[in-house]
Image (cartoon, rainbow, N blue to C red):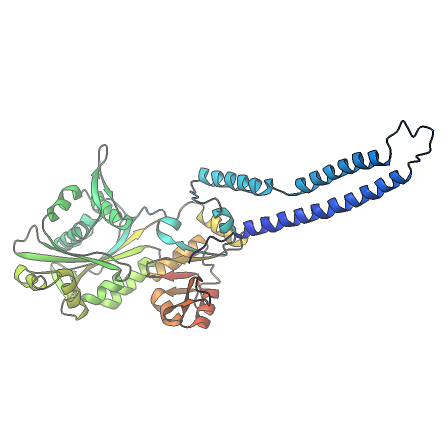
Amino acid sequence: MATDEDTKLQIKLKNLSDQFTLYGIYAAAAIFALFLVRLILELAAIDPNAPDAAEKPGVAGVLVSKLTGHINLIVVLVVVSIPEGLPLTIGVSLAFTVMRMYSEKILVRKLDAPEKMGSVKEVLINKTGTITRNEMYVHQFYCESKFVKNTRNDTLLNCELSEDAITRIQESILYNCEARIEMDTTTYVPVGNGTEVGLLRFLQDADIPVHLLIQKKLGQIRMISPFSSEKKRSIVALNSPDRQGRVCVYMKGAPEMIIQYCGAMMAGQSRIADIDQKDILDNISRMASYPLRVMGLAYIEMDEAEWTQYEQSGNAADNFEKALDTSRVSFTWIGAFGLQDKIRKNVRECVKYARDQGDLSLRLISGDHVETAKQVAIKAGILRPEESGRNYAVMTGKDFRSHVGALTQKRGDDMGSDVELVPEHPQAFAEIANHIRVLARATP
């Protein structure tokens, strides 16, 4: 059963309040004792036989008046020693802190959040949109064994690629895409996932009317296997808008994942050649080290009658995935596209301040290629040069899981205790946790 527990600050304030109250009681008792001693001395000094004794109050009158005043003073001392305004003062201070954070575009939903943030020692940072701007554009690409830098708007149409390759690139980007085209004041603007938006802008820069061509897929799609963090790819199958009776299947995603499904590659002049995986993977690593987010494109085209076998029983996407897993389907590699996403301003200074002044341990978690994540971490200051060569400093999600094993749920002795996730190999996990700075190709 979940219960609301006091925060560390609330516990400290309660203890401090109790201490102030206790000290106030001790001080009031000491002062009251001194008042009693003084009162006794005053009463002892009263002489009832003095000539002016009739004009002055007697022992009883002095005792009642003095003792009443002393008791009132002691009560006041005990009451004022209880710091009732301390929690209110801290609350107002936290409120001002939250308002200041809001002015810096940080939304705080709970007032005790700044206190909890102050106890944080480990920070896991996402790359895209956090370290980087999430404003991607195609920097270079590798297709038909040609390495091309995107140095001008119409590079795609003037880079000696075959007409067939250009067509496949356009269709793969436009048809296997969840982004949409919206009308701005005077222009058509891609909206959606940053990677897909960057690829659409790549086509727009070449004056390709994406707002018209993307509509060709409407009513033609026969199967969609959406992108997932586990598969690192997406697939779409549709009736070819330009080739009657043909079904085109386009795959897009992490190139090292896609290339394992490819048995051929586009080789120029409408030729298909045996795939050279080593050459492609070497160029992918080269692009990733810039650092660039590298996306691979592949396709397969078949007769409509051949495609219907995947729709005969059950879900077409599930049947096609089974065919992929059993190597009954072989794609043709189109190319790899490297998108640049610049690091946000002042990120390096913020990271340095967090590490040096805040004593925080920062780690980058990314779904990108290991070289892309590594180079971004170095540029941001998360991974220092002297750390990059250490064991476990840079790992992939697959390697991490193979070292620490599976996670198991463990509950404490109490019935109401929370469930804790414990790795299968806790010693390996502890060793990796002391050194890891970058986790690439991470999956949930």
